[in-house]
Length: 352
Image (cartoon, rainbow, N blue to C red; front, top):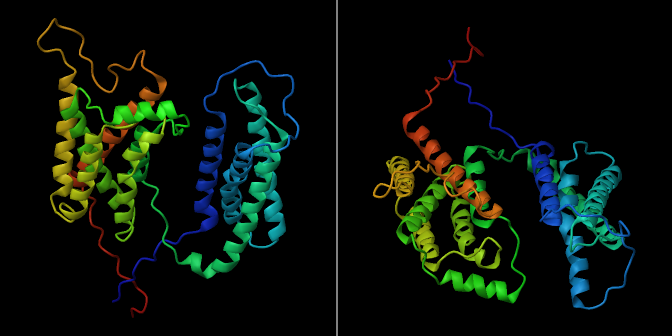
């Protein structure tokens, strides 16, 4: 009697990269149209070609090319059929041109923005360059190399990690003016009022994030994922999301280092993290209750304080609560809901 080992899950680029194409198309639309405000259209829908004058115009032209270049790369690599390479390039380039045309036309209704044929041509050229680059990558890589790759796990930890990133970086727009950067720097060296509770939130959140990342990425990639997570909070200094206090930044770095060198591999890691996360959630809930003054309606987070708040702050708050509550439930499931171990079924092959 022999046992048959299950076959490893393979990665099919044309199927799995399709999600990346849709995500990047949404990424382009988000950065092109934010913030969306309906207004009356101008005199012309698309302005004509204009000469490049000054370094800023050249930088803008190069940015338009490279902005659509990944779309061409992902579009060609996602193509299901391996024959007719030129049809692949033409179809992907036409798709990039159509997306650019829609977004450029939509910008005519956004105050302070302009749409031009020049940007449309540069975006189309960037998509075509990316498609040609993808043909080179696909030819050098070959089909045998991709068939042995393990499929990525698009699971709950990935969604929760993305929610943590949204809570830190939304609306994902850079600070381009010096006064705004100075204000962000001044906020970074300021100590917040609820320092200890915010510090506990940050530290426990980073520990939970580290546990989620270890469940998704490989062991060799996990330290690099932690390094990238450690750079998220300092980089908020250059984003419209607003900088984080230096105390919280140091707390996040310390939590990631502790997760990397101290608690990794501990049998009780998930159980302890789930317990600490529950305590932080309870502290947030009890901290908003008015227990000493006049009786008031109980403001249950994450809904307390949201009416009348700024839109970006509301999105970040909801994303953080989704991450913290969802990560806590995921860890509790890992601790208390253990899947039943399936006994391998014996193979009848070769039996007589």
